[in-house]
Image (cartoon, rainbow, N blue to C red; front, side, top):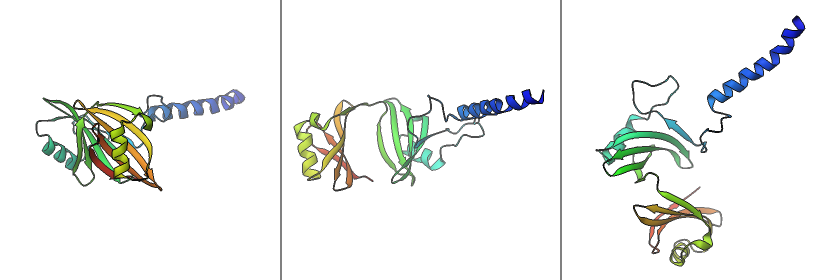
Length: 183
């Protein structure tokens, strides 16, 4: 009888370990794809003990930017330049993603669910490629994404020039909308 209990013990402990990992989402195929984004709970009376709540300063910034908005969801993102928060907000015009930095400033507001398609550098329009070269001479395009934002085509282009990375947003007509130095 002791032999049976001793043989049964390791498989039970392995089963318990697997169940614990699955309940934490570590091995779950439905776990979030972006490990740097953590879902946050919106203020509510119905929080579970382990939920992290969206900080009050983020809520204040979002409601100042969109006073008629209703908060739908939020996540905390650990980025190279620090922590930021992305909050989905709905108002009469639709659903928007509002990006708030750790200091409480709103960095970006864009319609949620914008259409994005990765494309090759050779598929960028000539005006966009010329804008990249004029803005960051001698750079190499490492990533290009075509986005449709409020019925306007925008190209998000990441470039590298001698180890320095830049992120550019360029309109279809070659107008440079934003330039940020990356990590």
